[in-house]
Image 1 (spheres, rainbow, N blue to C red):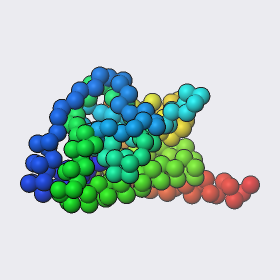
Image 2: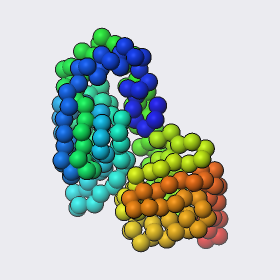
Image 3: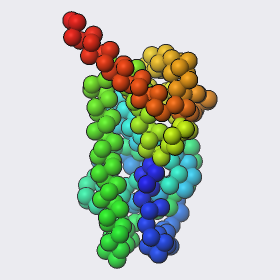
Length: 230
């Protein structure tokens, strides 16, 4: 599975049954698809565009958790658990998506146990991703947080040993690691000088995944050494 696309792992017959039941829905740039606490009415799979997953605090702060891309599904875990949506998701650019009503989705899950198993695996993957983000925010210094987030995102999309191309701006990174853009920029410049990543407008290209891992380990160790000296 790459990203959060479990549909690609279904058998051909089950995948066809699922897609045949979908309708197409288009969201304008910036549209709130679900706000935190909303009742889930549909499950979506992105065809084109991207969806931002974030937590919005009462005082207007935003923690960006993930940027879903083409092929990814949203809303599936909440439907299975029969819970309100736990975060806010917004269209980033115009988004075209397949959509299934909760009634149709329930019928498909009943008719095809393969779908239920895929959603269960997806839910575990989402939980691991959330715990990883919390670990980074609570335990790592900024340099390690930035490098770790880039490395983890490259793994999530199924990066090859040669690297990955991420649709990710430095402003996005700042919202993910909880730091000002200027501070993130200093870390990004260091990673570029070390030839671990390259950056273009709105993109980060991972060039040396193993080097990123070493960088993360080194900066975590420096942080622990600093604390032990106090």
